[in-house]
Length: 206
Image (cartoon, rainbow, N blue to C red; front, side, top):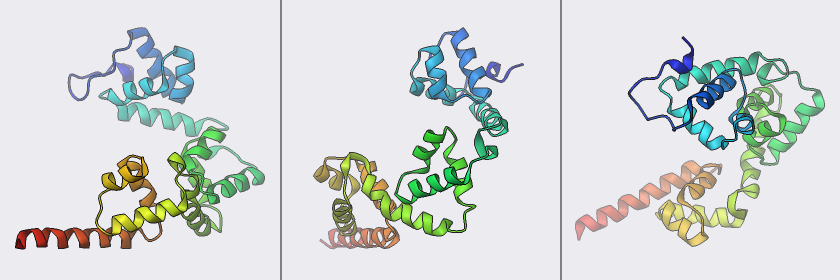
């Protein structure tokens, strides 16, 4: 029995897709093809394909088969042989604040494979520090470092992600992502909850 035939009546319902297309999706994904590439073959959006695969009761098994084939295929995954110049290019981009996900898309490998190669470099810790420090320069919605610093100040004073987001015309999760990348994040969140406790204590007294 093929893995996509193990459908159960529990968990999230699969996205409605014709049976022949559904089998093609699972076959191609299991062979190591990515949703974006499958989309070009099936005419469906890659997000719909991704949601369909995630909704299958045996999605974990399908995903394990997919990555097993990705890493086993020559020229892909952690087994792919990169030149010294390619590794150096990855390192430079990562140090500039570009995420491992975006670098992986460029080289058509998983982000974990990017990190696998970078973590083997003797200056990995320095690269990681540079990525965290410079990551805010290429953030979503064109947010600059001064805005990130202002967000951090507001959150440390007790404001919520949603309240801060409204001031900068972004979403709450966007604010959180940027703040969590700051080296001072542990101090920021500690200050935030300390302010929250003071407010709650004041309200109880009154």
